[in-house]
Length: 353
Image (tube, rainbow, N blue to C red):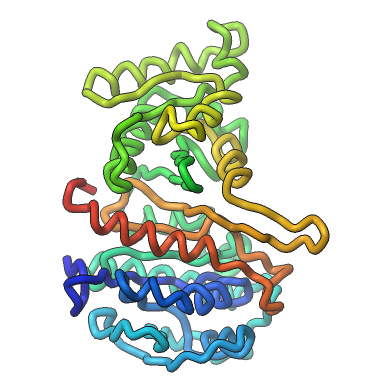
């Protein structure tokens, strides 16, 4: 794999811009206004020229545009946006804030192009902007989200979502399913695989000192079977298997305390059992909002997929259609995602993906 493009000190990072009707284009040009990114990365955007031009007009940012056919030819100069032009949109087909099949198809093409470049070794990692699951499905692609698209196009059967905000890192055993289905999916095999992927995530992040804390599924981790059987039948056996193989893992720990312990530095990462169990503490930790304006004053957090043959990180928020086209979006999460992609790339030599 070409780990650093033409510059041995920097990593070529592909950025799929997300749904063009959302805040993805805006936060992309804002993020790449941070000059420090270019000290360690060569960003390549997967989008359409017209979408970048609209974003530059919206944000009043001054960048030169450099259309390239291959990520390996990116210049990586601050002040110039290197991009792969898919030629799908001309600019007038979608409007900010609208969910439609055209923007859904565009966002799908952007991320697939980025995946293919990474698989071909043209980039070391991809960073994905926010997509609309509804728009993707309206365009005829039956995927629940990025994770499922990534699994399909990389040929992976099982991967896990990692969320990070500051010192809090959370990996998920289940994600985009109903709560009822999530409970049914808590099996020894699935929990064990997620614990193993938590170990991979720690190596990619360069963190292995305090180990892994595994959350229970039920209140009080079932209180010795009073509130459920998943801990005894699935979670505890998975922990014991992982521990027998040398992983530093503890649990099951009651869900109402495990995240407090992780924030306090007891664990490097928490294995959550379902979507909201993991998402709520991460977003409470990483997001801040002005109660008077309703605007986000802080948006720290990264979404990464662990278990793929490529590195993928992403923003930890959605398309924010209600704010699209208003120049109000905060780029902090995308900056964090680019930084994490670089960290993963640096540590990848120690990890078998």
